[in-house]
Image (cartoon, rainbow, N blue to C red; front, side):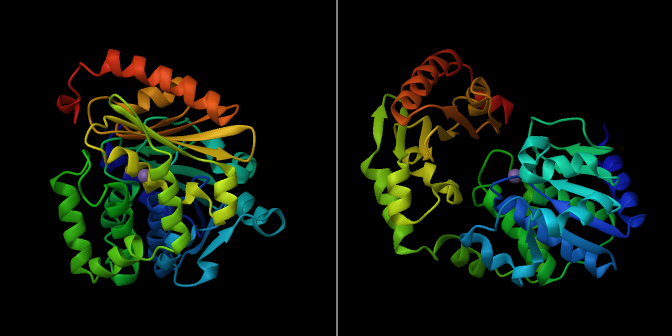
Length: 339
Ligand SMILES: [Mn+2]
């Protein structure tokens, strides 16, 4: 499908809609939230009735993006159902797999609304009238920027800042592989509209709590090196003790990745009792989403995630075994040509 044509078609849907729902994936991240907020503010300024409803609350480290607590609604059956079922248009951002809508999935399926999706992941379902899945985009934020440009939207600080944050977060501060010339141009346009990059940087990186640092300390002290694979883990006990949900801090997997010897970094997070969430990163030698796929997960070539049933020790064993084999098989082909 044609990228710009699809975006124009979405723009037409927006024009023809009065009540619009914007939503994103479970465990909302900076790209999902930034895209939602910017799009919501833009569409509200165009006179639309817009709600952002998510499966879960905004993580504390991203709350600086909110103008007020009511900007994003946490799904509540009683309060949210009517709007989801009866709005004119549903825009799903940063995900195209319906189960990742969490508690919103069933209502999404039953809604009478037109449904569109803006995403940059490989995995996705054909559950939308229009789906833009630009897998070479640095972020969903970048695609939302293109959409609003097509609509001749004039950004201000309020609409530019969340999009800037989306792009910065998903592109690893403008450094990952899908970050290209166009990404820098978009970012410079957003800065022109009043974004304060230093303020965003402080909010993103220098607003940690002491317990967050203690969580990082745990990741460092549990760190193991196995050739080019580096990994660490966080137990439920540690999370409880620190009163933190490690999944709110996706960057901690960069601690094992930051070792010079690391080609693959894995972070195992005990989630309650029965499952282990695994964050996986590659420095470039292998496409880590392929490994994630083996376990039913997904993501991008350098960043992916999946869930393993069972206890921590057996999850580490089975994933490590597969990762070693995977590195052996895939590690020799040169990924750089696929960037
Ligand atoms: Mn994203």
